[in-house]
Length: 151
Image (cartoon, rainbow, N blue to C red; front, top):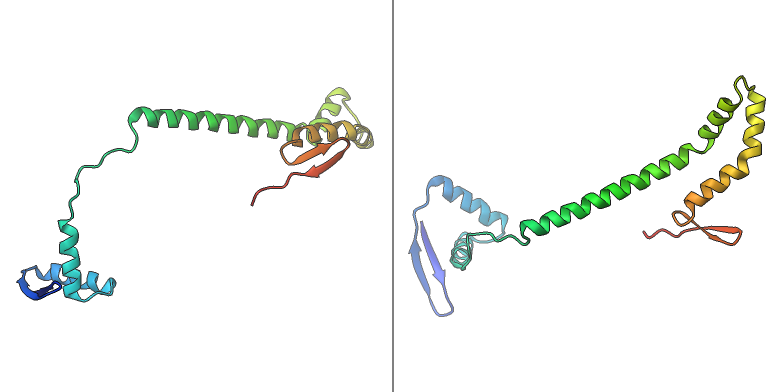
């Protein structure tokens, strides 16, 4: 295979002897990069001549990585704890109120359970609003507004 290298004043002939497999691979690479074959060869030779270190240096040392990992674990545990709190608050809503009423009043009839739920609604709503306050709603005296989420 013959190559012609160009500089600003003249063109020189250079030869190389790639295997058939290499030649086909190189030609495919040149075509994928929308370059002529000789342009591609020149570019690859120049790129290969750039000075670089074959060793890779870590951006952070092992202690920094451990600190980051530990901080992320703490954050994960805090999030899990918050999810548990929210789930507990949720289940302390309707289901918990019904279960507690039945436990305290074995043999309660359906109508009694309904009446209890209607009578205890303000207390349950207050509990839920306390949980939501600052999370999804904000309170301004006796009025509630949704918290604008960032999108």
